[in-house]
Image 1 (cartoon, rainbow, N blue to C red):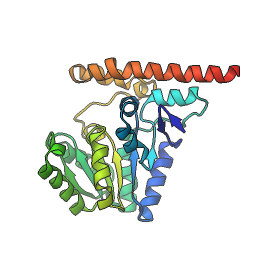
Image 2 (cartoon, one colour; image 1 turned 180 degrees about the horizontal axis):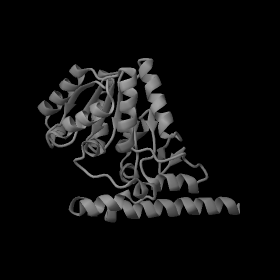
Image 3 (cartoon, helix red, strand yellow; image 1 turned 30 degrees about the vertical axis):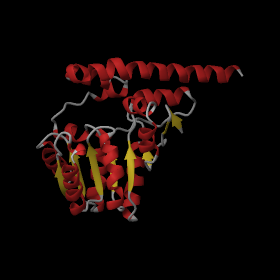
Length: 252
């Protein structure tokens, strides 16, 4: 179903995990994106970024405004499905199925900590590798080639790429053909959340669409412009447009 110009798959988290696990079991790879307001705002202005998202095999709503927008359009989504939650549930499925995992992203040492946390939570989980590329690596051919080499040599089946949009999804588009049996998950800050390097909002704030406020209060200098100047007005316009579309539909 289209929401804010993005095709969203109306699946709860459990069904997303089941879908990915089944595909892995059959030797099929894929790309999972978790659009939020910031991603929708970016792709609304850039056809190239929109193509990155629309080419993904699965897209689930990581953001309550998208859930609310779908509800206003009369096509409700079952729930919000976040990368920060999927890193846990998909790792659990990977441990059960024997699928090696790779963690790509975060500051130095963060992916290693996340690996240790996940392995302690899910005995039997195999983490084939971790990598924390230096800032700006995507603009250096040698650094980019090194990231690609290490990933291919690790031969994972499930790759969490936490570099932020669109950097993570551009990298995924570049390396998918090298690992056709792997699933790639663009997961934003999920690796840092898992490691405890960044605090995540309480569940009740996420459920009420207030996770952005928690993060803003935690990192005002870095996130004030993104949330207050860019994302909040876009979200309000989106919800107003969906409400108007619904009201106009009822009057016809």
